[in-house]
Each structure stands twice: as structure tokens, then as C-alpha cells.
Length: 252
Image 1 (cartoon, helix red, strand yellow):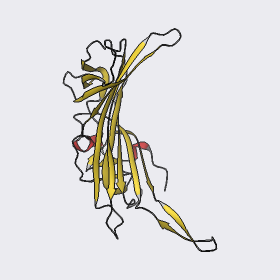
Image 2 (cartoon, one colour):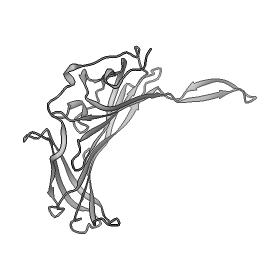
Image 3 (cartoon, one colour):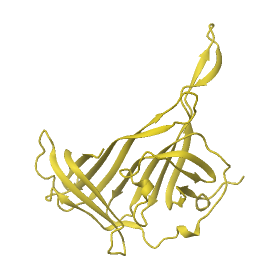
Image 4 (cartoon, one colour):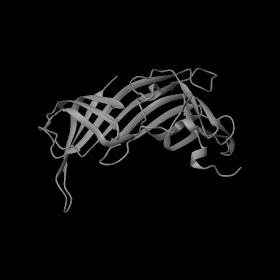
């Protein structure tokens, strides 16, 4: 078949079309050669089930979908399709975004899924993907303590969950995929680094609000309440001294 253009490759997760700027999907198998006594390869045997990864970047056009909320999703799986290829047994692993001056905000998400693709590559388009609101840095901001982290230049937000599949004897797909060690991390760059951190880490409570460029109502709020785990100062030739802090929260 002919090469498909970007606009004809539809991504859907949990039945919802995603306004993606970029997307990729892959599947890997874990194989080990079985050798005879003379060293020749008799065959290849799987050492684990097939495991794939779906990663995509998309614009926030409203409140973040529940299936992309790492802190809120349970151990239940979801499904979806990409360019006509369907996948099942998908579990959200991470979500992150970066806010920089005068730039749209792209949310990057990653799923693990178990088993292989099904169906065939085909073109599809969803006219409902045209939206009126897009996440942008013009009005988005971060607030909270430490309050002396003034004149914020940029900030990053990320949340990750460890996923571990549990297989039963005779099964090729996991009966359960656990959700463990969910951690939130936020970093801020500005003209100060606040007070010096101590051995136990300085307490920090941050809230970032993401807005559309033409709206006064936030699309979504994100929180990080934990400890400052890193401070830094950087300067470049003909530039300015820029401070940075990183805050880590053990959510689960």
C-alpha cells in the first residue's frame, strides 16, 4: 500500500481520538537459542511474553483524560489502535510535559502493552480532532513554596509508575500487571534556588496551572508536594545566572 500521511494515521486510546503531534509503537519478543549437545542451534524459545510500547506527544485541549492520569489509573488495562493496528492489555507507565516561554505545551505519554498487533495498517481520520483550545505557555504558571524561586523561566512535570507483569503457567499474556512505586517529579528554572537544602531535603509544595493562550480558565492543574532533592546554578557566556531546583514526591 502507499505511504500514509500524518493526517491519515489516527491514534485512539480507550476509544478516544488523540490529537497527537508524534506517535510510535513497537513490539519486542524475548528469545533464547536452544542448542544441542554439539553446540548447534536447534530452535529459539521465548523467555517471556511479547511486550510492546506505545509513546506519543499530544496537545492538551482540555482536562487530561482519565486514562492518562498516572496517579489515578488503577491496574486495569485499556486498548487502542494506531494506523489501523489494534492493541490490547495496555497500561499507562509515564506522563510528562515541559513549559517554556512562548511555546505550545506537549504532553508526552507512554504505555506498555502485552501481546502483538492485530488487524492491518489502514488510513483513518477524525474530523472531531479540530479543537478550539490548545495548551500554551503564555498564561501557564507555577506557584507554591519555596516562594523565593522568582521569575520562573521554565518548568518540567513528570510522573512515572513501575509496572510488573504477572504470568500464570501456560499463559502468554499476563493475568495481572501491578502498579508500583508511583513517583512525581517537578523541576523549575529561574533566577533563584531558594534556601540551601539539607540532608533531609527542604519541603516544597508546588502547583502548576496549564492554560490555553486565549482563555482565563485553566485546562488542568498539576501538583507536586515533596522534598527538594537537587539544586543547581548555571551560567553561559553572555548569559545570565540561572538557578534550578528539583522536587520529588513519592505518591504511592
